[in-house]
Amino acid sequence: MNPSHPFSSSPQHPSSSSQEDDDDLIATIQSQQQALLSTYANNNAAMAYCLEIMSTQAINPSHGGSISGHRVIHRDREDGDRRLHADYFSENPKYNEAIFRRRFRMSRNLFLRIANAVAEHDNYFVQRRDTIGRLGLSTLQKVTAAFRILTYGVAADAIDEYIQIGESTAIESLKRFCRAVVEVFGQRYLRAPDANDVARLLEIGERRGFPGMLGSLDCMHWTWKNCPTAWAGQYAGRSREPTIVLEAVADYDLWIWHAHFGLPGSNNDINVLEASHLFANIANGTAPLAHYVIQGKVYDTGYYLADGIYPKWSTLVQTIHQPLGPKKKLFAMMQEACRKDVERAFGVLQSRFAIVKGPVRFWDKHVLHDIMTSCIIMHNMIIEDERDEQVDIQSWREAPAPEVDICRDERIVFEEFLARHRQIKNKEAHYALRDALIEHMWEHYGNSNN
Image (tube, rainbow, N blue to C red):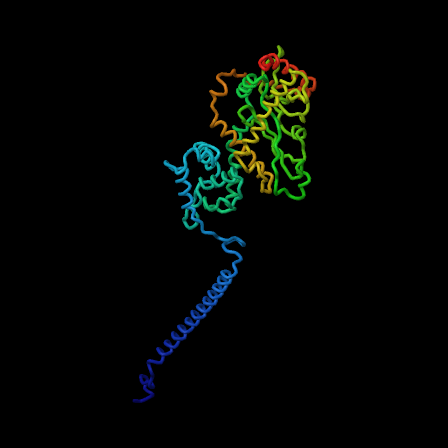
């Protein structure tokens, strides 16, 4: 064949182009394999490093979980909830009502009422599932943990074995529970006596020989174990230990009508009285009128029984130190007997809630205030739940609601306030009231004692 022929060509190899394509494909695959091998090597190195760290922590554990210093304990929360429900809250519980009352300091119905109200008020007590779908602590577990700390005064980690709750969770449950009790029940169970309450208290006071008596007044000290060192001198009183003072008024059935808590233990009862709001409603003219008659004289302001340290005010009646004569001895004996109501209230409060008897281990004063206030509220709730109205009083007269005149002249309002304030601290009125009570008691009870 003529090589110059236009249709003629030199010999060619049709497989040369395909060979080049194959070489490119092989190179690409090899590069990808190298990249994969490099990735595998990096992953293996990372895994080896993680295994080395985990083995080091297993030999010398420093921390675990997502929080430094936090060690995860896998508690059987579900089993703890089932056991608690079977022991106390099932249809046929293992422990009867008497044992429940002894361990929880109240009836089962009252406990469930408080637990349900707290759960409705704060979603923290509602049982929820965590991120992996596991049920968390139930309402009964959290509320029971708070109750055990309040009633027994134990440390937060002492209830872990039975309830299956951690120490930090128990402390958080206690704080939230006390705050919820104050917010939900405080308005009703820490209220000042209204007109009907005053009428009932006056009726009982007259039956006990003290017309016009609304209760007895005294103070209690609560030891603060974890008081900051910088405050220790301010809060240290006679016991040389930091304490916080509770001023309270209790009536015949140990209901606490007034509670003022928070002043340092270095204050005496007079300082606490001056700082409290016990007579604020009387000074403002908004307190219900207490109408009663002693030896033919009409009074419209009630009074409280107190010990000798309190000032000689018209709203306080103290005993007579070293009484001379049968009249004064009879008065001193009856006054000291009725004044023990507040002392008994303190004793019952401490026996029901051991946390307010022993040294408290919290740091924040607001937490201490919530704990004390919630214990007083539940103390009053227990009294209401167990009170038999027919035993205390058969009938009582209803007092009219107080009428408050709206005066636009601020000067007149201030003058009336000062006049009422001076009347409260009137020493002559104090002695006149005490002398009238002495004659009244001798007239009604002197012959029977003789």
